Image 1: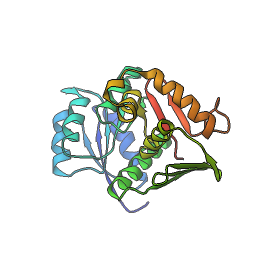
Image 2 (image 1 turned 180 degrees about the vertical axis):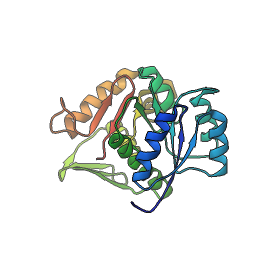
Image 3 (image 1 turned 120 degrees about the horizontal axis):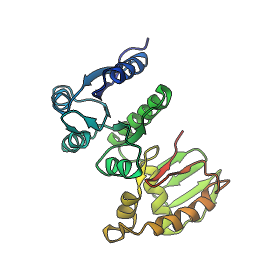
Image 4 (image 1 turned 90 degrees about the horizontal axis):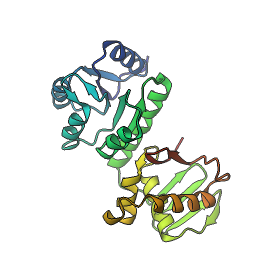
Length: 231
């Protein structure tokens, strides 16, 4: 077994699920603290700030989003929501509230561990000075020069397309909701104009993807937003 590393706070009221998560995390060297209620989660997080949080939304003393809101007031630790709520609006609400990712129950241990690794990697990257050069698969984004190449070939993007791709690259591996993208790329007055995204994302895929109809890198999270894959 690997040496214990980062601390993960598991906020889940079902004992069987806590045991499953504890075992899965433990085999990969994570230290684990468990909480079955909002109150226990708040105490645990304040006593030993976690590197990451796995958060169930349906807790006996309230909604997990209450804990997320309080946590975001002082911590940037990545939060992955684990919930039986699979509706698109529930995912959007959690992601807009500050969650980094969302997994619908049931899920496999391998997928969960992969999501945790991605979340922690990007959390560590946020602590470092922003690199003007981002390389993801065959995509190379030079923020300083406003240039993008794919497989070494220069790709001509419009200013909006470049801004959209650069924003997704800044959150690579993470779902970015429609509202977040519209607010950050087009501004607050465009928060409801989802057709802007559809048009520009389709154009971006035609320039970035080998097969725009089956995108490898610019993934759609149906009804929620987009994710630039980095694996």
